[in-house]
Length: 116
Length: 116
Image (cartoon, rainbow over all chains, first blue to last red; front, top):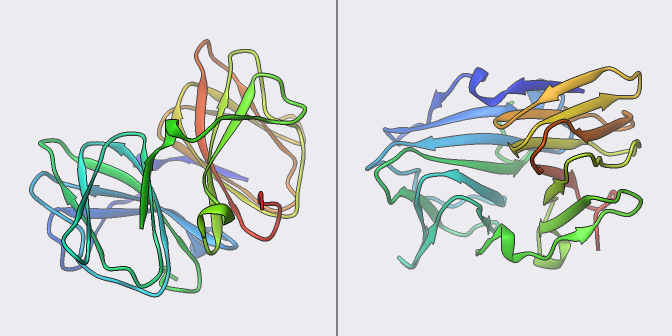
């Protein structure tokens, strides 16, 4: 087993999304067998990419406020302790809807979109 | 996509571990394709089972204090913002090491030990 502090993992920029960063807590680099655990941080006024991909997300909000946007424009407000699943191929975007940093865990399966 | 409050998901007892409960936030019942997100809560003085199984855990501590025990008896202290990976077949146990409820997210792959 391995343990670490999430904040000890470097925050990398999210391509095309200024103000958003990602920490790959557990991924293939760590020997994770099946899925990757990432911590995403979004500054006030910023958002993650508006996109879709052929794999799911499972999400848990740690702090801050988000609007989880559907492709239709519908917004799902999320706060600490709220959780979401985004199914494969669903268009989605996380928009920081508050004045504080939005922090959420976001999981993906490996071998389909994961960082090597 | 689906969204919900983690606390709206029923907390079920953990068999053989009085004082421990589990909320299956996303699992096969919700159409999760690859892995299950569970929220585990352990009361002061309680712990999860001391066991091993042929699939991994990825863990993120939300609140409280834990000792993550290895089969050897070695203890890894964990607190909020700490994260762990327990590899397949590694003996492990989460012991509440503080005076407050220990709350952590614990992920497992589906089709190997997941709730139907």
